[in-house]
Length: 218
Ligand code: MG
Image 1 (cartoon, rainbow, N blue to C red):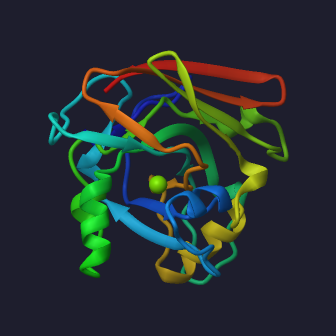
Image 2: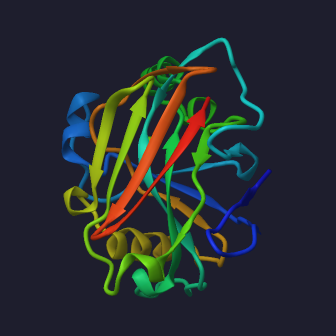
């Protein structure tokens, strides 16, 4: 646990799991939230990390919401207050920010932190990481999809982010230095919906002529 696979590389341990909320306008609206004027950030425990098809899952009898997200691996640390961009990103993956939506609603109503809704064993699903060098230079638009039980549920495109990758990373570095091994879940596009333990799903990642996909099972 707390380790990721890198295509063509060796598995590595991760540091902090940062997550971005409300980074796509249509998703903010589907949950009735305002479009934010600065990034919404929360954290997950490192031990919440899970490969796409195996590993512990807390609350296995609950119905979760899937949030499909592009995930960045920070490969080069960045000092507090520095400008950060794609140069600090070593690889990217497709992940699911698995969410206990009803618990999150209750947390919001009570003005409490979202942690019990967002950070639990298996809640940070992640595919193997694709080294940035395979995605072209500079990195262009990245598109990613999630299919659950054969049905296309979510499609993301990084050009539709409210806060782009350099803006997100520079904001994070304004809070605390970024460390090699940090992961950043960059927010979900619209189409979040139910998924339960045992459901089969597939994620894909596309950049120019590069395309990869992975099968998973919750
Ligand atoms: Mg999310």
